[in-house]
Amino acid sequence: GQQVMQIPQYQHVQEGEDFTTYCNSSTTLSNIQWYKQRPGGHPVFLIQLVKSGEVKKQKRLTFQFGEAKKNSSLHITATQTTDVGTYFCAGRGNYQLIWGAGTKLIIKP
Amino acid sequence: GAGVSQSPSNKVTEKGKDVELRCDPISGHTALYWYRQSLGQGLEFLIYFQGNSAPDKSGLPSDRFSAERTGGSVSTLTIQRTQQEDSAVYLCASSPRDSDSAKNIQYFGAGTRLSVL
Image 1 (cartoon, rainbow over the protein chains, first blue to last red):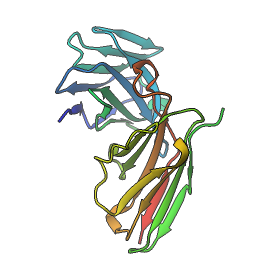
Image 2 (cartoon, rainbow over the protein chains, first blue to last red):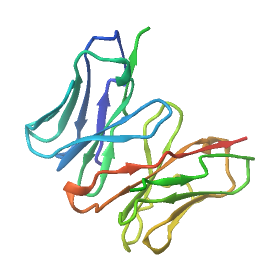
Image 3 (cartoon, each protein chain N blue to C red):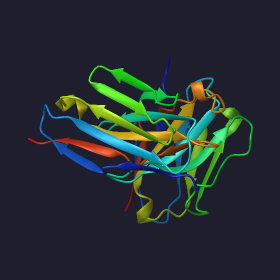
């Protein structure tokens, strides 16, 4: 079946360092969404990418959708404590959203 | 407007008891999803309702799990004869219209934390 692999599972960074999470699909996606889940919270929608090669920015967050529409990335520049949480990608396959396992961003004390 | 509402927010039950979890989606949303999230893990898809169509039950882990959606709105997830491994957060999400890719953003409720003793 369709799968979306997300790596890494965890990333520990010093505050101010950058963070990147990657998603790869076994099949072409019609679109991909990104969600953020704060500790103890529920997933909240961040952005949706639809076009091949699309790049979107939200302040320090940059989202990319691959040319083949099979991979995507989220890059956070100069992380802050408010960025802590788990970032999920969810790709739209033939039928419904297929969720990645999430990448947990941890800020080192 | 109001978001997705789930109740109860916490449920503690004894092994072998049945539990019912409720989800009240955003008004007008035709798609409704149930997920399970164990501590520190990702989202495990359970079941999906779209309008009046037959639900997609492909994610239900066993026949102890069932869900219904009455009148295309409120949904109830029922777990019979609960086991300790059922302990998790159960999340509900609704979406305006699943077939339209521009509108398939999922809006999540705060979840029900189920603890089976």
